[in-house]
Amino acid sequence: MKFYSFVMLFISSFFLNAQTIRLYVGTYTGENSEGIYYYNFNTLTGEISANKLAVKTENPSFITFSSDKKYLFAVSETGETGFVKAYEVNSDGTLAFINKVSSYGNAPCHVQLNEKDTKLVVSNYGGGTFSIFNVHKSGSISEASQILNHNTDSIKSHAHSAKFYKNNLFTADLGRDFLAQYIFNDKEYALKENYLMKNGAGPRHFEISKKGAFIYVINELNSTVTVLQKKGKNDYVNIQSLSTLKEDFTGKNQCADIHLSDNEQFLYGSNRGENSIVVFKRNLKDGTLEKIQNISVNGDWPRNFTLSPDGNFLLVANQRSENISVYKVDKETGILTFSYSINVPTPVCLLF
Image (cartoon, rainbow, N blue to C red; front, side, top):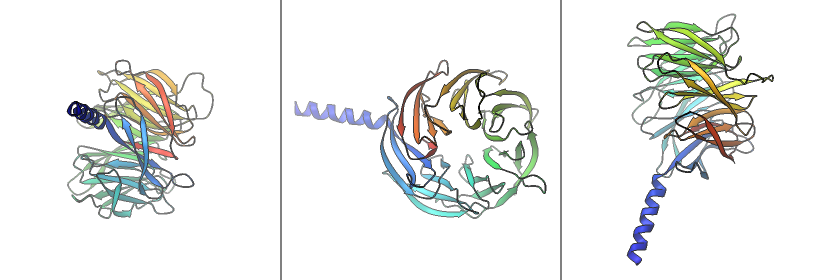
């Protein structure tokens, strides 16, 4: 009987651990927050529990993993000069500081690695620059190898996000209303094209389809999503632009984040003002979108959001109301159903 009880306890413990993963939360630090936190997330129930401080650091407003999740990289959105910091992920979930370097611009707001984890790009919103760094196998970051300055004499750039895709680097410039495409030429990234959005659109974040045939840009200032389609060998054209808001919404709004479902059948975006998540159904053949839902975030000012690795849940970081809202995802229809929310200190970035 004792042996049977031991076996059942072992099996229960195994399945409990198998269905629990870590959720890291980047924050704005201050009265309620000290840095980057981590929680346990139950992939079967969607439950978030066990709040712990992973590391003290100032304003880690965007965080990302290396592909093997051994290292975590965070911007530090501070003063006139920001920083990007590298950490090793300890077995207990805490983060061990490796090094930091200047982001070469103020207010860094986004960080991304390339597929091989050898390069890292930081977007400096206040400085209007995109800084590129080499990353070592130890996880440490070298000083910037290249700085892309989008400012002109007459127009202030606001660099908001950047992503590597194969030999390309795409960058969203909210201040100059374009998505830029750079191509690596064995030494550095050279500008190929600026894909213009509507004047005053304010491109903020974007998603690239897995085969690179489509790019979906969420525009902060005019609350739209712009669809770019690949034409020819390596060129893109604008094929669609549509609102992220309900037709009867009349207030002020600023879009924030955007994500494709893993099967690429659905696209999600966050609205700050309407305080909603918008859901689009995606045509897998021509890449166009159809709006199918706007659902309340049950909080205020949804910044970043993320889908759980299995795609069964969507989690929203509500910055001003200081809570994370959890939604069940119908993977057949893409529709979201609110589950619950949990109080979290000033969450702005969520990372599995």
